[in-house]
Image (cartoon, rainbow, N blue to C red):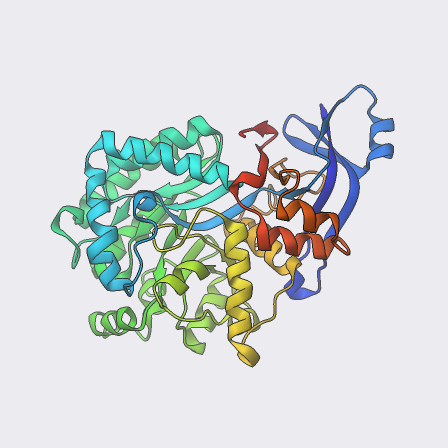
Length: 427
């Protein structure tokens, strides 16, 4: 048993539906076997548990572990390839690098870099877009299991329009996915995610194969891309004349449900938003990637008004870092640029998007996402270096909301002083 002492900020109730930032300036959190068993003012908690070890996290703030709902494992080494729209960027930057994942030794090195990057950024849970090669996905699961992170991932499958070495038959995709899930699904803190790259590169038989795998792996997630770029949307429309929309290419083949997370959705129709809401599916908003590729400004207000669950993703390759704090800030900028069509965000909104919203999207909100009694102790301690700009502005913040806004504006990986998953310290 341990008592963690510090300034604790979280959002157990969604600010999009009236929730506010929960802030305790001198809180005590009791953790027993990885689970929060008591929380309250430190003096009261300490008196109730005099035998417990005290872990001092004063200075800075303690946040729930960050939850990334869309991040590409094979793209670590191509971050910063700027100046191209989506389809050009895929052909010239991302896909050549993803082809290198066929080499298991290369993939193992990238998996080490990837997991290290997540932990350094304070990410404790991630829905990871895997690789096109089963051997590379195996490397990712091995490294994730050893690290202690919560990771959901799977084999990325395509059977058309990409580089030949990235293609696979629907039959082999199902067999390889089932084998990977058999070894890793629900082992330690891991889950399997059925992952067609996007409808543009997957035929109807491949989507049917994905539907079969989703049915065969109890509790698996589904993830893919949707409506990221206007040229992509038009191409998909031409490939699926029988479908009413891009979203329908997944819905028609049984791939939309409570554990479905579609990335981007920058250019949805109202009908598509209605379909996503009816299916109880979620959208991973990747604001840095959308900005870097010029994909467009994410219509968050329309998503929320239609009742579509939204969380954050770093994307990584087309994004700018592993930091969900940076993505929260970028989402704030994006909504401001939309003017009257945007949804003004507060610091509480940004924290919710980076934590509890992600947990809900992955159907893990009963376990993680905030620091309430009964939840796993997944936490991040953001503690700025003495004399740094973040240290200075935090010392002069007006209140907890203002302090949190300053964390989103200024905090980086160097300010992440501690990371815990299920009570285990990873950093």
